[in-house]
Length: 102
Image (cartoon, rainbow, N blue to C red; front, side, top):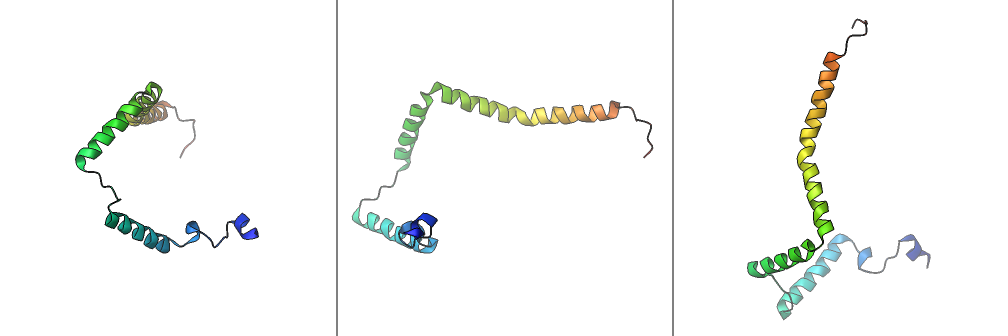
């Protein structure tokens, strides 16, 4: 079976073109809705699920600290960049000409 090693297999869902995959998936979705097995979150259910996930992840203090640090870096990055640019401009203005004419 040399085809499966090369990734050139013509078997399975992943080897189908996207349109065919989409058509099959749509049939499955319609069937699930028709049989009553599909679940759609109401706004209230979504709110409860989101709160539950947020509470679970917020228990990890290291993760929350990393998120806070990342936000702080992002918030202050533009002001640091502006300060660096101003410093470079000031350095260029203060630098004496080396005697070469332009």
